[in-house]
Image (cartoon, rainbow, N blue to C red; front, side):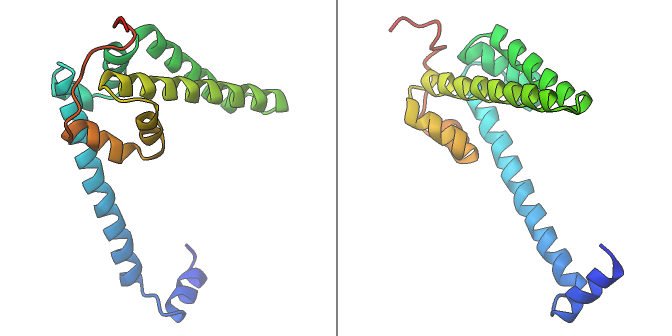
Amino acid sequence: MTESDITNLTSQGFSLEAIAAILGGYLLVLLVLAIIWVIANWKIFTKMGEAGWKSIIPIYNGYILFKRTWNTKMFWISVIVSCAGGLVDQYMDSTLGSVISGILTIVAFVIFVKQLYYQSKAFGHGGGFTVGLVLLNTIFVLILGFGKSRYIGNPTERKF
């Protein structure tokens, strides 16, 4: 922010203290939501029969979630697809690079949604709950963690 931007804001009735208070409040709300989300994921892992601490380890938590709701091969495919998409986007400045990166992003998103579908099924819910997990993830993670949902097993291993 330049000095003229600050002067414009203060001349419009904004003070630096007010801006700092708004940003501080916003960050505080985000921190509280993040803590609640972590606790809910801890409870989800506990419901699945895993140690809760596994939910707070990046990458490992995804591996465990895929193991308990789908399969670990798809976890590694999603990691490879995501990394490849990032590398293509970073190192190919052509239209072809953009197209390839876009396709890989779509593939990663489809894998992500399918994993959420299997997570929903693993807790006895259906497609509607999957939509909730995609669009309002924090709220539906809270429902899984703190609600009456029970882990009924990996849906890809159960006989229907």
